[in-house]
Length: 193
Image 1 (tube, rainbow, N blue to C red):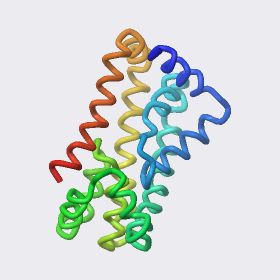
Image 2: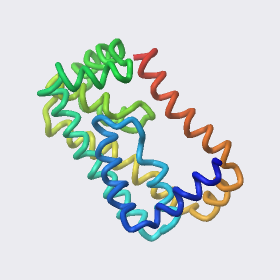
Image 3: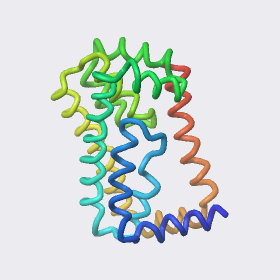
Image 4: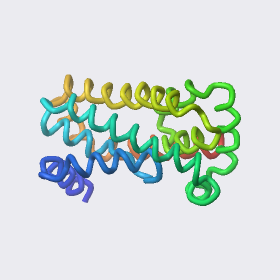
């Protein structure tokens, strides 16, 4: 079943609407959506390595624009939408600590947390809630998200065929590793923040 899902994602990566889906998921993940764009993003690069840089640009820009929506949720809609998102992900205590960190390290929190498996939506909402300067937020987001997507593009572009072969041979291990990183991000947010 896992192999069927993998091959479906790989085949969908070449679909004529895949770029739109990638853009939408990258946008939504930065503000409210629980799943990252990485599986589709990686499949699209592995399927067409020559598009690695344009895909990294699209993911970076759509993620930053989605982050501005997250910022707005924190800034103007925190009492309704923002709190609902925080409660949905059971991040109330971590969010309070994140807000305190923002008051001291604003730019660096956005820049560094955007690189980690910690869900970026929490950073975007917190940025708006504490009223971090919007330009500071945007610059830090471009740095963080750009580094993340372009680094992954570089690795996949450089090692493409060998990584694709490794993934196909060790699909269960790669899947468990990816899910573990996602769960780790949520656990770090819940228990260490």
